[in-house]
Length: 154
Image (cartoon, rainbow, N blue to C red; front, side, top):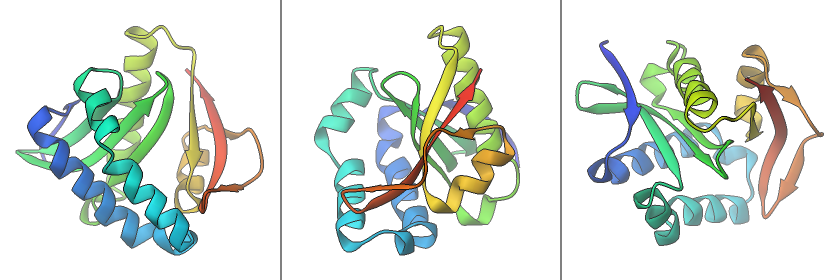
């Protein structure tokens, strides 16, 4: 696999969100209520989110193998990871770790941030702990979405 990490392009938005939705349904949806699944879908298909991306306010980066997106990470409010998803066939190959490192480097160098936060899904808690994130509160549930707030100092 020849990995390229970079910001996604406008024409790649649909493919990136399709990957997010597909992986969410495979690994996260069983932890969510119907309300949570619906709210997650509304979030990734929201026209306002897409416009924020086009304006450069909502950052999203991809790991590509040739033209194919294998994983994505996004940040909102400058330093909060809002999406981190890797295609099932490419999990456990270092892609998620590489995407987090790429985003952290971007936040430190380009944005001058000193930390990054995430509201981890139950499926990803172990991964985030493994790469150094610390819980900032116990598992929570809001609008049907289950998550554990975490923080990592850059």
